[in-house]
Image 1: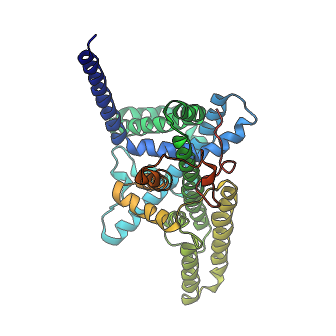
Image 2: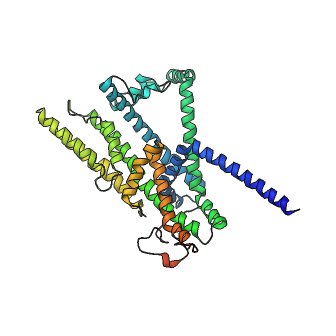
Length: 389
């Protein structure tokens, strides 16, 4: 075999590899939101998965318990909270200009009356669930779904995306450690990938589990707690736009130090001022109940639950805040996950790899050269989690 034949063969394989790489990038680009959200589910459930592995040695069973017993119910609860917020936004928009800009009933096949009943805490509490447990009701529901082809198509697409998210998160939990060791063994030169990967992983854990999960959990709790509080509110003393206030509290939790206090403090002051202005001081007890529920249930409890898991915060607070703010503006809803991911990748590339590349010297990452170990550095062995199979 001549050299030209060998070169031609290698060039052909490089061409095949380039085509396959472009195809993979196209798939990732097409379903970028699904893949990014699956990484969030992975990092959100990984600490729980590690605890389950201590009691369940089989990685597949432990990953399944973490995903389907914890992540899936939490995801469905968050979806319901978003549905409540969307319904309330539609009502506010209709009151403002007569047009429901955020109207979820515009989705094909969504029944307005049913949606209003499901997203209303008063209606749910007063609902007679026993009347739904009959063969006639089940038959009616099945018949309705069989006739609503648009609804079935929408639900089918959503279920496919949900399946991909959960499946990818499941396999990352089960095989993430094995995959990382494969790259370190076959693609790493001098420990660069290992050092870079560990530093990125530590900050992903902080961002996804410590910050974004806290915001989602807080927002979901806020929507449900405030909506339930309004069920018992005295006349004229209800929380204004309760579900929206709960969602904004979750978003505000991303702000350091003050967090969601930026939301429920002004709302409590407004409610108290309204009670005094309307000479309804007898309803101030509801304002106090709102403030206590906000501080204890919405603010303190999620923080206490997540704080023990948050570590490795080496990113600049301002840079993270800009990533949270600019991400959704640039990429859409998934930008709040994607932009911080890009920030972490860039920051640690600049800190670990770029100085040596510019100087033209051999790359000596933190994992290899002990002289690089400094207090407060991005990665120090023994302070980061290690993946289990």
